[in-house]
Image (tube, rainbow, N blue to C red; front, side, top):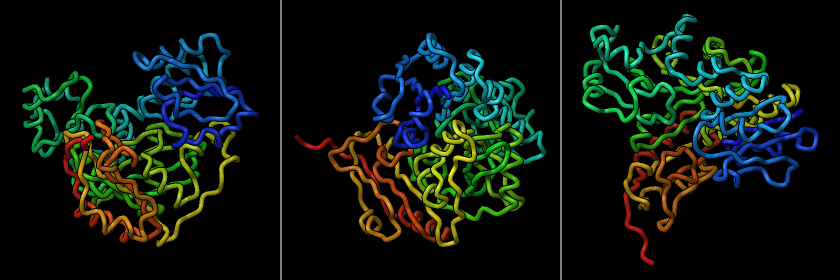
Length: 405
């Protein structure tokens, strides 16, 4: 098989080298100069550089213009999914098309599809439509979320007390992007679940539920975030499969988020992708399946090549956490209050920035890019959640001056 990899995620995360038989298959990696160092080493493969700026699909098509048509295209980064659909369409390669990619990237499209399947979502509207028709046209007037329709990591996402307040803020210049790129939706109170797993021909290979401690939105604004594995009961699996069917995810990985309410889960959003590093690491420890690796194996060699997942027991759950530094306004930080936690037997992995180690300025969920991050378990769900909450209540990350030379 001729395999074209649109290289957006590092080999340390995906493990391409162990997921694809590079001797059996003809593998072509299309990468940027900035990401080339994160390619697998020591494998038989062709690597082609593309431009790291401009339209991704155009750059990839230009890079492979003189090569034979691939049999399959692997694109695991959420930012590559729509470009990959355009590349498939242009080259005539099987796989998700543009409409399918939009259903798992555009929040208006995905919520419309889920609502049409009879599942509850927050009430929502395109921002431009709400601005044109006014708050009185909306079926809710209460707390409201403003977010990009194809955003990631809760960037440019805000909450407001009412629909009127959000529209007034937008008219007052709140946004840095075009209003056509945004939506508003009803804020629904509740804990946030994420369900992660892998489908093969509409059948679940493995699914694991987790509960966030904190929220991705609060993390974007500088508060810590983590999650711990939760019970994955049959009703929740059935609900998740109905959501996935509604948006057209038939095979491959997924990361589905839901709001827990007394009436049952409310769909928030879904991606045809793997979750963050912490999500993937905890999932692997609990189930024996590394999701990005399994997704690649499934696409290249089929479901029969996947390992059999294990079902973790009540005391065999895992979790992860990250304490951010991107809102500090400083390239260096001072960390305190963590000593009691880092030696705890529950800690499986702990990463912490040194005083002389500069921080990444952009938002990141990777342990190595934040002041403090780690992996926890095995333990019960309640013990994991309790540890994470106590950690968040104790650890302090403050701006610091650059170290003296």
